[in-house]
Image (cartoon, rainbow, N blue to C red; front, side, top):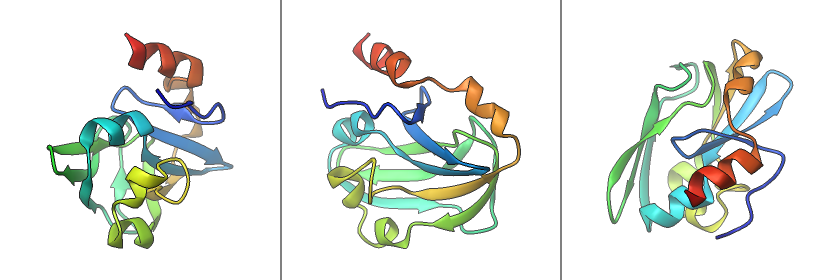
Length: 127
């Protein structure tokens, strides 16, 4: 198992979030990309689309399955990572770096308190 970055928050739906003020960068975890296999396509809401914590943000299609990507926070998509949209394998190669998916302007940053820290996520994926 790869090291789980300590500075992120995590969902049981295997998305991660890094908050910078009221903007949250969102991606899928290394655990998720490993289970999905080769990622072929992301279908995500565009800039300006609304997100609700725990609800689908979009889908990810891999050579094994199509899965929903769940929003870790509520708000409005302020940026879509066009590099990952055009080269979805970035989420396989660098899920916590260049392979991020969207940035969300959070409507309630306190929702971050509902997410797991790295230690909790490590326990979750090992159980």
